[in-house]
Length: 384
Image (cartoon, rainbow, N blue to C red; front, side, top):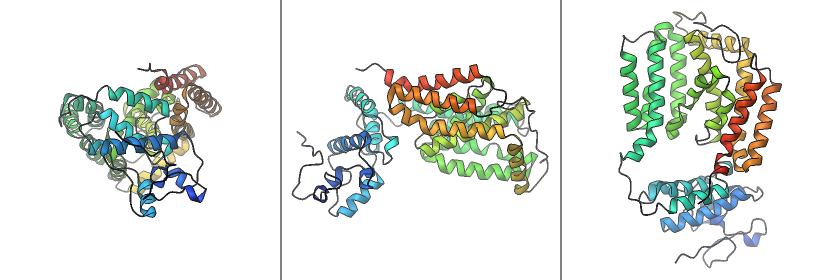
């Protein structure tokens, strides 16, 4: 039997905030945003239940310390990963509990979603632990490995440098690296365009190398989503970029999702330039080499890229709309069908008011509401 403290009971050895009259409850069970003085929300209740579950499954408290200041510090840092601590438990169970204990309230699942995931994972409690390279693990890594292969193979094919046939070799190596480790696949694929770009312009290659290093550092902890910005070149020809915010929700953290939305537009622009097709949402011609052929100066490359995007304001306006929609998407999903509907109406209104070049209203509305439907999928899933 497990006895759970719901935060209001007075424990003999526990430091509580009840007596202070500001935040009622035992310190070790209170959500971090409540400790910062914010109002209680449903996300705070999800946190508290997550603490109970983590404690029951791990056999110890995730934040308990003798000192109240140390306890508060541990609460602010977040709980250790239950996935790593209890690999013998069903993965969906431990990942759900870890998500419930996210320090950021917006990253926690809604109460209904968490309850559904917990009920579903309980049915898998008798499953055996997965081997390091089990079929399930390979299936999880297949998507990121495929994106790494597409990125590296496309770069090797579109940028003249590698001998004939090598793009397929490069893509296969990236896929193998991604299957072994998503971070390895991300790093390998990001490095492929450096030499081909250096063949065009040393300055441009240095600018891209800096971007690749920063991107890898930001996404190494969530490498499986590092190449989701490749959806930009796929969606742009069909004028479907407005569905992108609903497709990058698997990335951890609002800032990662925002970066993916920002990078999708330059990625679509780069592919348009390399394939000599019109720019996204415009009838403009592709930029070509921007006059950088043979230039060794990174500063000149930065100036040329800045001047190009300044001359095409529709591209950064489109990026701004995508970022706003991406940041709002998880909050809309957490509020169910009404949240998805309000999100769709707001994004459609912003997109119609923004000067998005030659895009017509019908495909724009179609894809915005397709994104809203994707946000509503967790709500529409049948309960067990």
